[in-house]
Image 1 (spheres, rainbow over the protein chains, first blue to last red):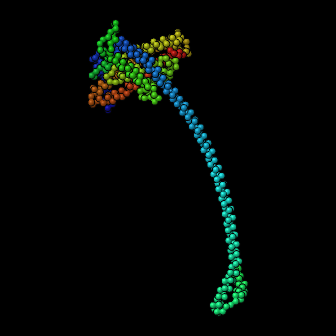
Image 2: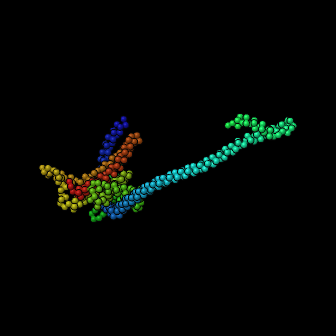
Image 3: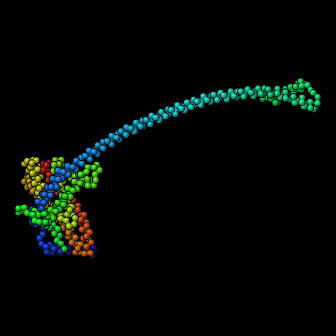
Length: 196
Length: 244
């Protein structure tokens, strides 16, 4: 709908244009030679001056700028490349140092461990010996104590029996007779008390 | 239809009439816009080449991009031998581009919409290229009109066609630019007239058309400058590297 009106309006407007042209006759101003010479003159003047200034002053400067930028960028790229290589080499060096020091640390650790193990072994031996000695001494003491025990018990038995008898009977009794009895008893019951 | 769509191309005198002999070289609106274009070109490229920083600012980037754009265009079409003519083609491209672009501003005058301006440029290019061709190759330059690998029977016809096409170069070059500019500006004026004549009810459609046309015309303004420069490069290539 809109389209139709639109194109119709364009179509009708061309009639108006025709009328307008007819009214203001003269056609194309481009074909009027009145100012041709003036246009040629000013064209040559302006274009000539512009060409001279551009070619002698401005364009060489721009081309110099471009070239210097290009060379500088290339230089910078080269420098960057060089630095990258340097850093790569340094990185390699660093890696080497790291791996070397790792190995070193490992060996030191191993040495320390071995040393510690050795120390521990030596100390243990000493301690073991000491413990063994102490055990042996203690055993000896126990042995002597055990050996002496019956005698002491006999003695205690004789003394307590004599005192008991004295209190019970009120008469003094010869110790030798009591000891004979105790000896006899202990020989009989010794195995019961001291049998290992 | 308030104004004639062709009245935008009128040339009128600004200031007094200047006469040198029989010739009228008065300062006109065309001269004004030529001067405006050249001054803006010189200003922009002077600012763009003043400082040389590694990270270019906007105007430096602009001028350097245009430099590389034109230099690439020349080396692509005319090879390395065309290097001495770089400044001329650069000036030509910039001049045509700026004149076209100035014409896109409302109420301005488009210098390149006048056949005489484009014809003088094209004729200068034509004569220059022909002179370069004859200097480089002597009369061997006439081999341009005799393409290799053509049957002998067709040769007379081909040579005539080649000569005509060669001689029509300045005309085609100048008319192409002039006609594009004139047609575009006339069309925009006509659509602008529609907006007025159709009024508030129907004027929106031609207005939107006018907006779209403005974009198209800016494209055309650039494209025609580019075409003008690249055809110059191609003609120069014919003159410099003669192997048809």
